[in-house]
Length: 136
View (tube, rainbow, N blue to C red):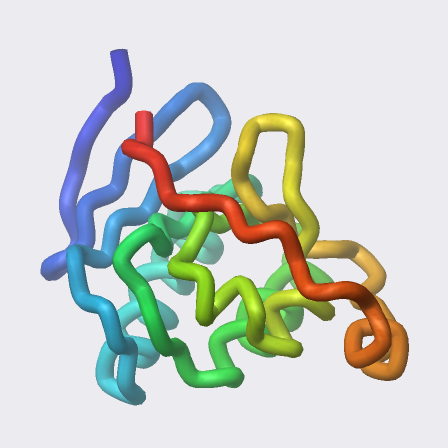
């Protein structure tokens, strides 16, 4: 059984050592959503000392590219592992997504320690898209 709590409009679910962050069913994130997410993640990382966080992306069709940089920065500076639930196909096709994330055995997309070179991403074949499934 997982423990639930809330931060503003986000639901935080603990599954073992992993925190699963649900931001809601918004399909397009804007700057305000990114600021809310940054605030929530800062609390989890700095105050709660979370080191494994999965963000529910199943509804998201568009996100600002700064999202990827924000996660990568925390990974480097605070040694936090980030995963994403499978996002919509158009997010999976984004160069930034393909550069920074790889599919895990659990079915999530984990943030790479060493992102791919952008030239490798541009020349790689079209990704095999994974449909979002119900998050456990």
